[in-house]
Amino acid sequence: MQNFRKGFTLIELLIVIGILAVLSSVVVIILNPGELLAEGRDSRRISDLNTIRAALMGYLTQVPNADLGSCNSGGICTFNPGAGKGPFTNTTCSSISAATNITGSGWVDVNFASIPSGSPIPSLPIDPINNANYFYAYACTKTPYFFELNTRLESQKYRNEMVLDGGNKNNCDSSYTADTCFYEIGTKPDLNI
Image 1: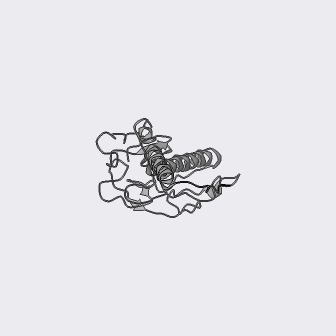
Image 2 (image 1 turned 120 degrees about the vertical axis):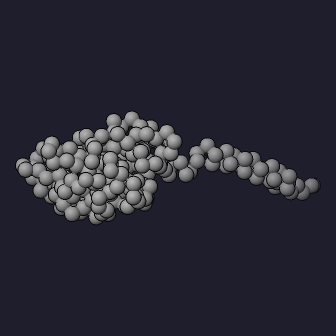
């Protein structure tokens, strides 16, 4: 009676390891984890600004004698982008605030707590990265009541959103991180402040 040893040879194991290495390389190249993370951050940015826009619209329709805030020339940014690199016409944020308060002292300086049905948001969101390239910005006018919310998107998937949003900062051809390329929404996304 013969005793047969069961198992894999060294050659078979090396072939399997080689196949797994090739497959994992292909998956990493196809999926591009960096781009997937950027898409997730952009999705959050778009969602955040849409939520704030809806809250501002609710505020304007429900609060008598509504006040959109200080409406400073140059708007409010959640991070200092540096001189000449803001999202508004004068390209410099007039004030910087990362405060998330909804009582009129946050980066959107509107008192959402004064809405009779209650504030639709518990706090103001901050950009997932919040640095000189990726931040949120708010600007408004008092007569008439217009507002604009801005951010910059980083992923290839959402980059066209900055070109097609109807705003006036949609020149994204040469360098999408330039001060001429922002995602703009609001009652007047091409607000000249």
